[in-house]
Image (spheres, rainbow, N blue to C red):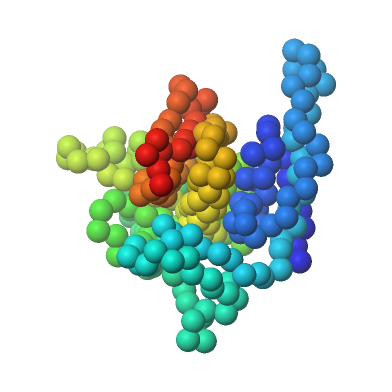
Length: 265
């Protein structure tokens, strides 16, 4: 079983950072709080929160009825996380009760001469990063790029995806500045499948928090998130019959609140 230590400005952030590094969800780990965060005096002596995450052995998981695909089935269903029905191993998306995620087809040839790909390649060259930039050929709207690098993936992702998000933002500015049409072109930049992993982690975390809010009847305030992370949280819980979500705060301090619904069953 894997075990790592992770840090953050708070215990919640430390747990989140550890989950992203492991690439698994919060209900698949045991959490040990090693150190609570301290703010110190005027920033002097401040210490981050530190946790240890240990991957659990496979176990039976009870899935509440509102999380099942068949909304008409009002009985909770017990399933084996390591033994799918009919002795067939389902796809990852099916195991997580998620719609099948579209598989994109990337190629180096398609990226040749593409303004977004050329911009990213130029930035990587100035960073002395040896990597290939590929363009997805089966995208209906927008531009999807993938960076393939043997050893620099984590550097390109950065803390909680901040480096990757910044590069994606700059690429989007370049593309839309050159665009002569009025339509906005959406640019998505990924490496090592980080976007999908982060979305899965956020969705599982959102459901875990929703279950806690339902059980306690008290709202839960999350750590500050960027707009993408907040959208994933809201989308994951938008049809949850027991909780509602909304955002509070400004700028980098904007965060999601998960609160019980007044008329929840």
